[in-house]
Image (cartoon, rainbow, N blue to C red; front, side, top):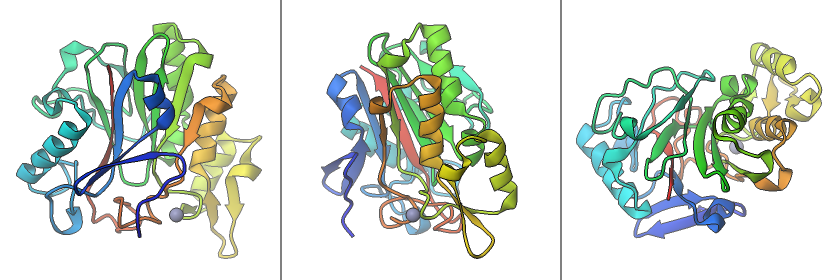
Length: 276
Ligand SMILES: [Zn+2]
């Protein structure tokens, strides 16, 4: 099946394919992307643009994959700033001192699921295979950020925490912040049991009927995209400034790695953003 999206822009260069948010592109202020499986050199379960170093793939191939995607989006892979993601809600302020941590240097940025910076020329990167990537841009104060929101990050409301940090640390005005919610597991595929549902009910007492759909089999489907969107709107982000993907990673195994869809045997996708 061809990769098609009504909300995200699909870019191609030979076999390589990557996605961007049109409302971010329209500002001319960022280089950014969400990657797909296409256009890399990895084999087997990692085929082909695996960007995860810690999943058992050959390091040489992963490095070549970085060179391929970074060249296409005009980012220097040697400057990428990685963090160790742990499904929590801590946010780290990235400065030029951090450039290269994770790719060129060991990273001391541990237990961090959100990266933010207002410095130009620093590429931030976070990793995915079903969890929800949140992209942030304050086009006036010029601040960019990424947050890794799996179901745990979603109930901990890492998106709301990020926009609060943008306000308090960088002077952002809510109306200037653009949000992109990227490819991840959709409500079509995110089936959970009682334990996860109870966490959602606690986190979203007023909205649970919109976010949780009971099934015949005693399980529930949860809408992570809407949960993140509602969290951000409640925080004061304008609805028109939020763009949500229409691509579920588990429904599109030809194009994306999906932890659930591939039963854990998979590579990693990445979100990258840099202020121009
Ligand atoms: Zn799906």
